[in-house]
Image (cartoon, rainbow, N blue to C red; front, side, top):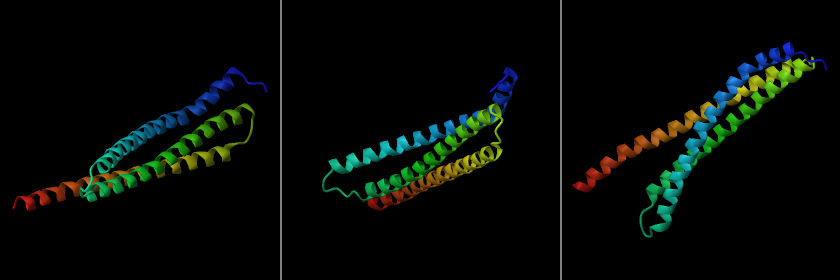
Length: 155
């Protein structure tokens, strides 16, 4: 195993693009985990409100909780796929180093891991988009329904 300084710099050049991709995936994971934290916080508030009020009609709170649980489920899928993408990109980087340093033919493995990582990232973005649609649809429905209910109670 005779690796020269020039070989190492070449390997590092090969690994730069996947490292930038890994940075983007890390940013995506930050966004996803922040969204999940907000969903969990809101769920806890609603669950506490339901637990502390007796005899009140909790149907709206239960509806919102159902929406929050659906959103959390979608975000969990997105986090799983984004993390899978990050792991696959790490495998790509390691395979680039190992393949080049040991003169192994890992091109097919590297390509497969990269393509799988891209599909995982695409899936993560699809689940994020679905979660955003659920969140904004619920927001829109609450703003449309609430004024009508207030108008009917005022009469």
